[in-house]
Amino acid sequence: MKEAVKLLRDSGIQLTPQRTAVVESVLESTTHPSADEVFEMARRKCPTVSRATVYNTLNLLVEKQVVRAQILREGTVVFDTNMKKHHHFIDDETGTIHDIPWESLEVRGEQRLDGFDVREYQVILRGRKKRT
Image (cartoon, rainbow, N blue to C red; front, side, top):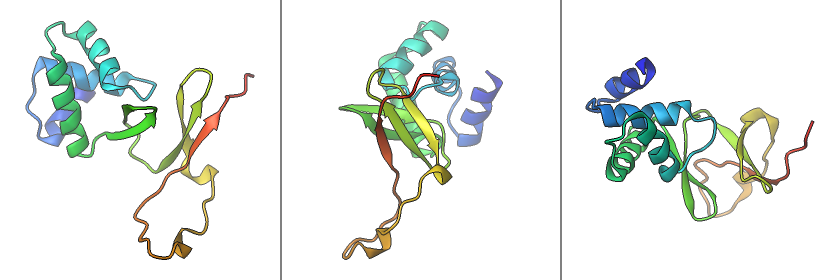
């Protein structure tokens, strides 16, 4: 809870029990949750949280650059708390999204894309995670 309160304060977002529950849910998630998944987690912490509050709080967090909204699952926006440069691997079998360290992959040739000014990029890999 302390981390959620600090994040809200540092971001200049007004503290409410509902917003704190949303932020706690996002920070505690080990996945890249959708807004609906955040809503379900936040409801367990604060039964009075509304879907609108979840969406509004997530949008504020994106605006404040605390989380990143991305479409990594078909037709679904997910929220990523890892703000460092990284890539993603999506397991075809489970749908689980894994962070891949930036330095694990090398992308070349973006400077040669004539007519494009590349500001950022990431690689999204899809397949099956090997079972160990």
